[in-house]
Structures are given as structure tokens and as C-alpha cells.
Image: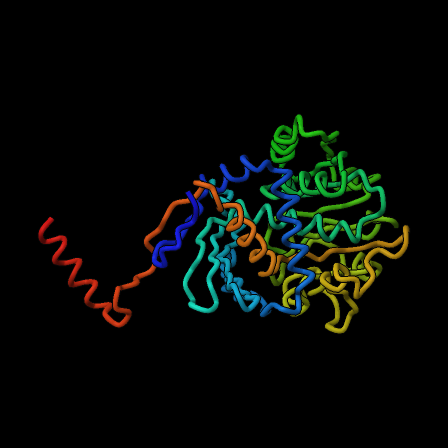
Length: 353
């Protein structure tokens, strides 16, 4: 079974389909292959339409649309961020996405993106670290052991060889869940009692906390030289994880500056503070890590091209697969202008049924 060429039938990848697809490919392989798509699209960054995501904020969270196009395909993601959802047993982040043909405007793929977003975020983090982390890095502190944590750990192992984890979360149960989930995957895991303990001896520090507030997860005295910081949690106005002093002595790398200056850690800095765009490092137009003692910071907020890459990857994985459902999603009458006629024909059909 392959995605159908019937123009009004759209392949839909459900949550169940996505889980089966990831497991069939293998989580590590999926992340490595997805990272290659993400990196490929960073290399052709200048071919994309780019805009900061469109956000609707409320006291408890945010709902966002993230669109982009490379001139041939158009993609967007609907995503929310509601940290308080955990109190009622719900996910803090849910998402779905669409990939469409630019020439006709017809959708080509409709997919869940709650799981896929966690995968693409981890893949993007690992791509950035490939260029920014200290050479020979083996140990990562993972502060914030929520839904992103295992994906981040596995991506860094698969792409960089990270095999020592130091875990910390204010919720001890979250840390223990993360530790259990990663058992048997080739990690040496230490559950820590404080963020200070977690960062001790770490080559890479990943922060992935959820609260929608200006927080100080890392203070300046916690970060020595020769460290790469992967700041994942700060991704909307008023939501940060790092003390400003860390930013002032770090070389900062971002996805799309107009979005990151509003949503990322650098919202704490002056608008003209120097930063480097990740695509420039990937293409060789700018330098990533230039010295062993350097402190590098990937101020990750997530950008639409990464979702585009993820949707492209999933669509390619569906060829020869049955891990999707066919949705009758587009009204496409035989005569394009006779949309009302479709209703009349449907009425006659149901009347005689």
C-alpha cells in the first residue's frame, strides 16, 4: 500500500501509525535519518519562505501556527504549549501538521505531530551540537525530565556518542521515569538531587523545562568553560531558563533571529547583541565552536523549517508502507465549478440507499 495519487484522498498518519512507523524504523535510526533531513534543509535555508510563528497567547498557554515553503512544498504545524495541562493528566504540547503541493494547493500529507515534534526537536538539538559541542563530549546533564527528555538523550547518543547522563527534575518521579525508560539503551545514568549536581562534569547541558515563566534554571556560577548549552525550554515571550550573565559570556546560535529575539533566551538581551544563525554554521558561512574553552549556547525555540523537514521525512517513509489511513479530505467534483452538484448527487445517493 502506498500513498494514493487520487487528488481528494490524503494520507493521514495517526498517533498509532506514527508509533508503528518509529518502531519499525527504530528510534535511533529514525532520529539519525530525520536529523539528516533537518540538516539538509538548513543547508538550503535561503530557499525557504520564513516568518515567525503566529501565536495566540492566553494566561495558561499558547496556540501557534508555524508555516513555511520551499517553493515546491508548503508545510505548517498547529501546536500548543500549556504547562498546566499536566495537572489534569494532559500533554503540555500537542500538534498536527500538513504538507501540501504549492502548484495546486492540494494537501499531500496530514499527520500527528505530538510525537513527531519531540523527535524533530531532539534531532535539531543534536544537529546543532554536532557543530557546537566540545570534541569528544560524552556526558550530558539533562535538566527537566519531561516529555522531551528521552528523545533528547537518544538523539545525542545516536549522533554524538553521548552515553553518560546526569538527570534532574524538581519532580523526582519524572527523573525516575526517564531513567527507567532509558534502561538498556547504552547509557550510564545518574539521578541528581539538584541542578548544581547535574551539571558537574557535564560537557553538554540540556535544559527542557516547561513552566511558562522567567525562570533561572542555570545560574552563571554553574557553567564553567568548555561547555555547550542546549536550551530547549524557553520558547515564548516571558519564558526563559538561563541567567542573563550566562548569555553575556556565551557564543549564541539561533534558528531564526526575528522569532528567537521574541521567544528565546536572547529576549533578555539588547536587540543588537551579536548572535549567529545555525544555518550559517551548517553551510560553513560562519564558525561554530572555535576553541576548547568556549561556551556555546544553542538558543532553541523551534522553527517551521524543522517541522517541514519532519513532514518531508515521514512522507518519504510512507512509500511502500501501510502505516497511514486514507482520508477523503478534499472536495473535488468531476466538474471543478460544480461543488453544489456534489451535494445534489449525494442527496440522491442517500435517498436511494
